[in-house]
Image (cartoon, rainbow, N blue to C red; front, top):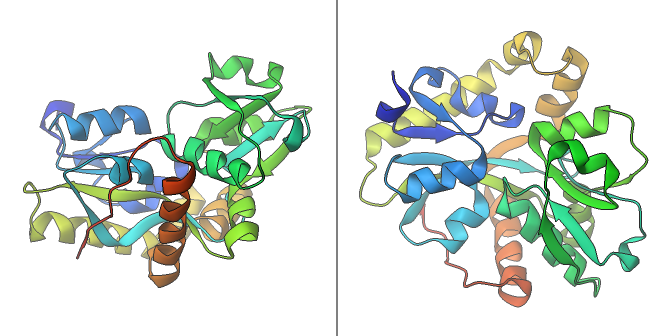
Length: 254
């Protein structure tokens, strides 16, 4: 199936692999920022987008029951910093995901810290910068290489702040362009991925099996249940206080 004919989009990160199990051939894999552009432009009917895409843009329904979330350490969304948090004035950010930027923004703002956020020029420069926000596989690569930074895992920071899970990504469905068949396909893909998680951990090519076991088998959660929704509502509350654009109340569909 050519990329132009694919109506489902996801991200090329290890944490999303179980959610597209069995539908890989009909899924277009691009980084979160490009994925958001594709669904906004009508090129996709469903996309596993950063949660802020669904909170900042009109026209989406959110598929209930499915998310990329953590309830504590996430290991792939973090601030690598050389300065003390209270001294930080500038953070260079991976622009692939607005969610991580906004999560860091609200966590720091709650501590009275309001740095300037600048785009990360290049992943290769990350280790040279004082303070850098990284996500996904590039973030994992950074952690596994030599570096002199302290690591502030944003999953841990959110858990300590709220005592709730954090939702990083959801299936956004373009309103008026999805039906029960599409929704059920995505729900089945998650169910199949969870049922075959041991196989994914054993056979996937990203990183080593021990890391995949700890990451996919422990740190990443895939449910969008009541506690995840409570965490999402808390994030929305803070975005309304500390964010820089209007927030749209999410509409869940089953």
